[in-house]
Length: 175
Image 1 (cartoon, rainbow, N blue to C red):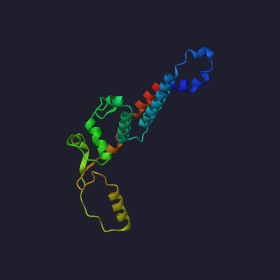
Image 2: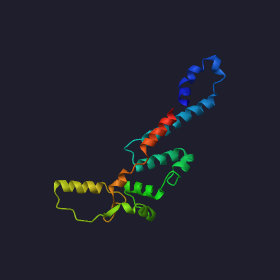
Image 3: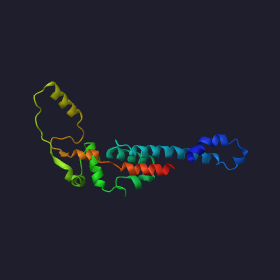
Image 4: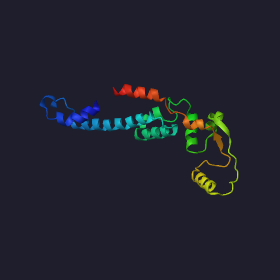
């Protein structure tokens, strides 16, 4: 409705019969700003529906929404009511970013731990193992240590939302 108003407002200004019904200029600017905000939030809703969106991606998007719209913090923050297990979500995101986990986060994902990596010496340097060593060293972040716990790869595939429900709600709100 807002989109249609913004599209037609200039053409409607020239029709005397509806001139009195038109919002004033400041109200029109507010409606245009509202449309920009709705488009921004719609892009987040569409991104949430992607099968490639990870829990980390969702946290990044939600943090961005909170930064732009602080009143959304109550609904989208890490400890909001919609987050079933804040410690688990935070742990999964930190593992994806190779960051250190708190004790609470470690406990939340303890059942996914598959062991600890061993600090073995690199094999004799041939072309492929040297390249692999360089790539591995280049991919290290804050948490990459010799004895860092290893977690089940299933954690990297935790769906952030039920995509079918997300699509249903998106379709329901677009009509």
